[in-house]
Length: 199
Image (cartoon, rainbow, N blue to C red; front, side):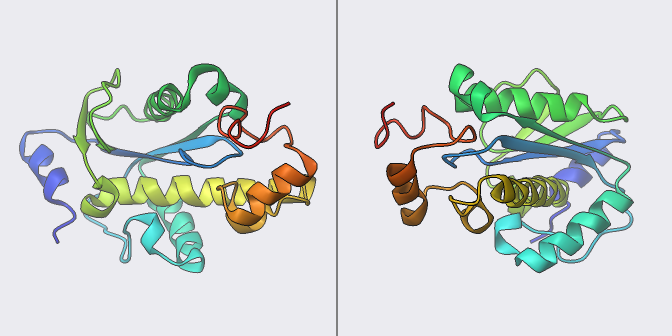
């Protein structure tokens, strides 16, 4: 599939700076939701960019560094587990995506957003499964996932009992059993664990 089909359409419409934005961490029981936005040069395509979930961890880490080095502009934002509990995950994702786009040092003419129309306060085109259809969103997907995975691996040193370095906060059987056994830590989303943990 041509992963520049959306970008080319906007270039032909006279747009110069096309940003991609994607989030990671919508579903975990612990940790922040992370969004990345990036404007890439479209005449110097990086081989191997795809939906971050389809790429091995080692390759993702390598692509992460290349994308950052080649990007015209990029921005990575997070919304904490505390704020997710306060405003709910949908609003947290919208806030995170908006902050990531507004954090770009170069103002985009259009932003390609992974997912359905969530009425973000930015000039956007929404593409379902955009991380595998658009090169720019694919780059954003890799930035967000590697950043969050690295963050959760660091948190694992602070909270070694939960195994964050393995599951990155997602609700694996082992993770849920650990919460039931020793209780949650400050990284856990209270609204996400209420079915099996009550304070």
